[in-house]
Length: 92
Image (cartoon, rainbow, N blue to C red; front, side, top):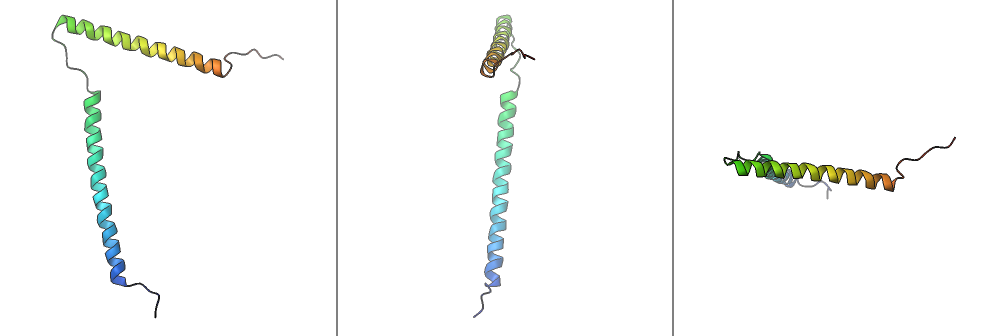
């Protein structure tokens, strides 16, 4: 009795692995394309507003978003400084 496995079973196993690998690659490509299209739709700029009130409200909304971003950044920086001591004077 020999301990060598059957060559045809090895070839079948390799073919099955290759097929599953191809199938997984196809699924990954489809998923990647789907994510890309969703992100492009998400990042796409808003359509231009035709009415003057809509343009003004969009400007106000953007202004509030910028203000909130700055306020959040300042609060994060102050919290970071308070956690790690902020400014310390060195004594020589």
